Image (cartoon, rainbow, N blue to C red):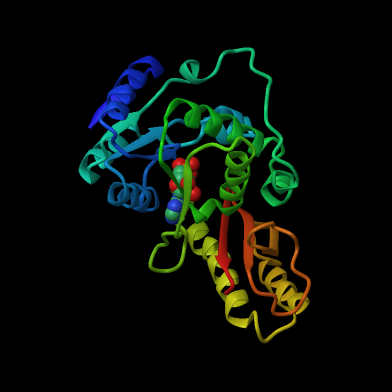
Length: 279
Ligand code: AMP
């Protein structure tokens, strides 16, 4: 695997690849790689001549400095994982390579970025669109791979690509879970054994909504979900919502198709998100 830490060096390599008419798949990550990330790399390898992974813990998308500080950065292990899976190129820039100290610009992609995660993590999606725009500008990818795990993020990036008519195809890949249902996340490393057990409540709640979506009224479903979180020490439910999977508009009508259930909760100091399609 070739590793580039500067834009200029990566750019020279990319020019060669473009000359050779290679198709490029891009997998942006913040590292601390797990099987969820690897599923994106594998899909990209399957679809493209060349797969480029990026590892960059993007400071502008963290609304809590403590969250940024404790974000895991096992770079050596990540490099080995990427080598083993056959990733072709890794872009591993330092913060100064991606941002100047005076950047205050951001894109506003509209209402979709202000809901749910946007409401609970003010500024989060401004940071996401900022870094993704920079990566898309640098890397002329034919396809870019994102996980359904961050479903709202996928919709926000889809909006960004639509606004700027960027010539990259976006693919939303399935959520990879532990056998007991917990969605893989780089943040799971912060969970104690007890907290990890409590974290199962997120996927269990989504499963329960999915299983009863066509038989119970929405209000009952959501109420049941909220009640399940009540009185559980060390766990705080941020939201549980049923939304349209294209627009994120709230679903109010019983049995409406095209729905997704989205959940966020804090388990100890660790914020977890998950979602499930209801069709
Ligand atoms: P992150 O490193 O957390 O920024 O994630 C990088 C990419 O991996 C994003 O597109 C995520 O949605 C995706 N991802 C994270 N966790 C999972 C998972 N459990 N299954 C599938 N994709 C995931």
